[in-house]
Image 1 (spheres, rainbow, N blue to C red):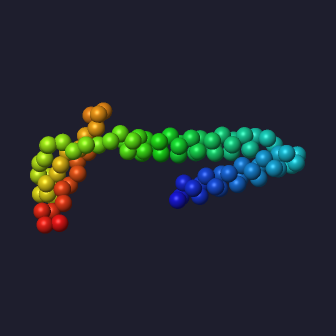
Image 2: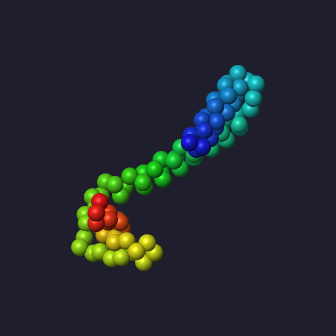
Image 3: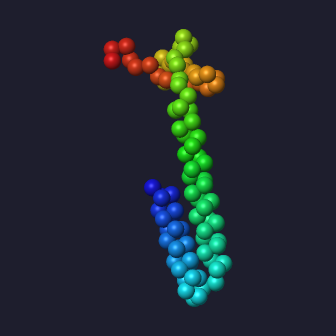
Length: 96
């Protein structure tokens, strides 16, 4: 949510600087700088949000590997996909 506010603020400042430069009341340096910063913020958001959905596209399947987590004492099952990525999923209690 904070990132959305920052992108919105940079967008507003960019538009105001662009409008001022188009009217001849401000130099063109400010809109260029804010435009580059806005593009970098949007690129950063898209770059890292793409990594979040990447593993979701690759289906995870449960393996036969199970163990007791030493920290919580609960049983854990290992899930993996074709790329060899592993995910450790706590098994629900026996009565649930």
